[in-house]
Image 1 (cartoon, rainbow over the protein chains, first blue to last red):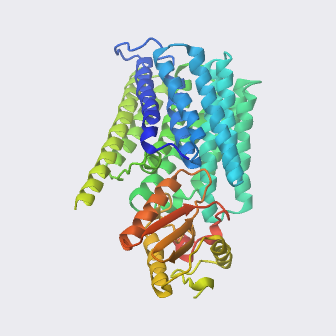
Image 2: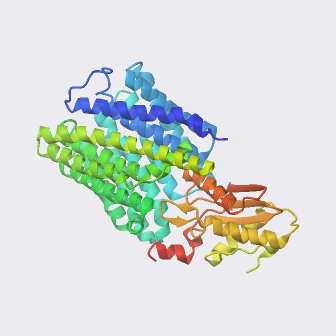
Image 3: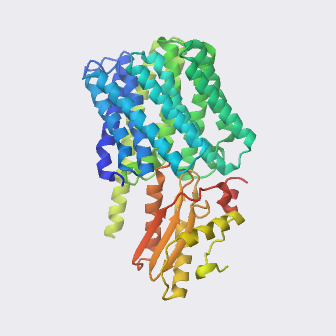
Length: 364
Length: 139
């Protein structure tokens, strides 16, 4: 028995509030003078984005996929963790809740593997373990710049696994599948190696990222589906753009290695989390939000607005980071945050439009 | 093509393996003693056509051509459909199941019951795709 769609709304709401507060803290970190909502928002920008927002949304998605009530404990934990991260109340409890959420996600993947064994599901399971390990390191006192690579591993493997699953439709040869698995293993070895030597580890991770990005750019089903129209094309456009940002992130890691603070670190994190991950989110939002919330969402060409804005302003920001120019970095970052607000607005309007269309259809 | 039990799919399953899977699931599917076999067969065919309007949004191909529809059975105005998903961890089965049900009800509003189930055995494989689907993907 699953959790009813209406009962999932509070969980999604906690995730979205975490996103909004993370954006607020992120803009403050860029130096913009905003009112102080809570003292911890700037410092908790990363944990809110990854653990509370992405963790809740991904957790919800997988809980819906399994269709069992216990699966929703994960996004409940990360959602509540987000609330504590926003307020700054009981930080260890906030961390423990995010740890719990990641443990539940790993258990969800065990259930999926029992339902049907597949190598792409194993990859996503390893991704969940990476998130769990990163959260445990964070809970036991490691700094964000040490654990973020595990969080990156989580998201990277989640997406790699999904794309490999879809890649089966193209009857990719075993040799080519092996190339992707080798790239994934390289990336994860890099993540693990950060425990021994961060600089070496992130360079290996970077090599894995570039290999994954190139493989996806050449072999992903998006290369075929981009020739279609409507929503299918929209998804493909976002995927292909995201792979470019993934390659950029990998190259930055290969070239510069570990940079614990400063502008290169900013460029690395945001090419990955904004350029790659949010491209995936933008592309799949029209199918995932309806599946999770039980409410339809009409695809609309206006979605391309937030897509284009994302890439333009992220480019401005990253150029500012790499040329040590504070103005483009700050302005690009601020406009990145506004772009995400445009995305949220477009999503809400599309859900509303579908609701009105369905209501009119029933009345007619 | 007439299959055992008188069911006659409009759409030929795309490959020999697909047909084997189809027959295997047919025997597992609950059925009732049919009162009007001709009507049942016609309604089944309509359901197969209706399900062609349900799309996998990621690839832009309908679930029939994707090989995701395993069985369609109709008896005495009650329909039972078994579908699968390409991945066991995909949340879209909720949406696709709902869309499948709505598509059938639009075409056959007089059906007493429409039961669309998601099954995980046998696992979906690309061999189940029809030639039409493969052509769309650039084969």
